[in-house]
Image 1: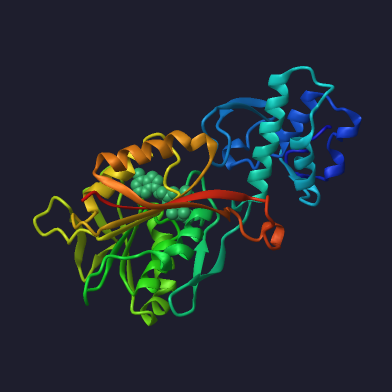
Image 2: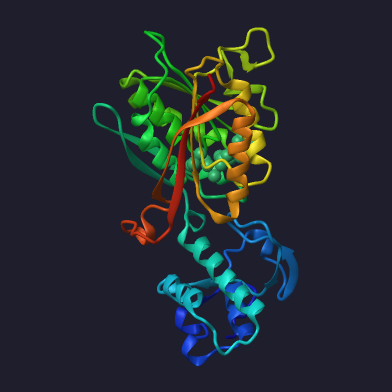
Length: 370
Ligand SMILES: C[S@@+](CC[C@H](N)C(=O)[O-])C[C@H]1O[C@@H](n2cnc3c(N)ncnc32)[C@H](O)[C@@H]1O
């Protein structure tokens, strides 16, 4: 396939322009096609056939790969998912190099996840129905167009599952006092907003500085609905690598900077409940997340941590490490389970189907050893 175009023009390719499996195309032709299908960030808009080391898009950023940049092309999406799926399912008997076959399968999988996932979509708002003890509570979540590594701008399967599971959680009995809940790595805020409504709780939703503006926006959008369930919610920046410091976002209120620290004398009471979803995707995350839990979890024996993480084979060491770290700070698991969710709802605009974008997740509840 020849996919060049004049510099000021963008050629539109159709699936039938690509090497078809029944023609037993060469590995090179397939790899060239898969390179062309890359959802290229602007930095890739460079001269023809420049080669450089780039990291794969999405969450599989562990290996660098060589990317050959060719002229800008646009691809008609019709039939593209089917084409990529065929490549993933093909045994390529006519190609005798196993490493090259692996590369084709990997590239096809990456292209599929880039294009079928949120990364290819513009900003959207969508609503999620979350069960509360009385009825379904509708939460409206805004997700900006994804940029770079900002995974927190998208709502992940584990958070929807955890939000729906909250009403089953047996909470610490606090008498008439309002329950304070901390969410770590809140992303778009689905879990924290749900918790505020489900429990009529006061929830602090936290994440990194670049995630806080959209998080805060979602809290504002849902404020009235939260308050109608006797809950309240605030946003703050809390970086697990500097776990003692937490700063409200927006940080200026009535002329005063609102920040607090577990080390300050006037620290807020620690939180009897901490929530986190899909927060383990690098080797240092278990230690960082757990040290943050250690900083902010109440010392009361009835304090609880509830987490939900996707079960992805590549992240098994992170999950095991998380369990060890939690035990290391004196927490033990009281309940756990597995369930299925979808990392992308509305696949191709329709209802998600089992097997498409499906993610198995693990949830667990932790408390202090007595
Ligand atoms: C995969 S996203 C999950 C977001 C949300 N919980 C969900 O499930 O939809 C992981 C979140 O953890 C946050 N995160 C990663 N490293 C962090 C750190 N060092 N401190 C605070 N948050 C962090 C990211 O910004 C992101 O929002």
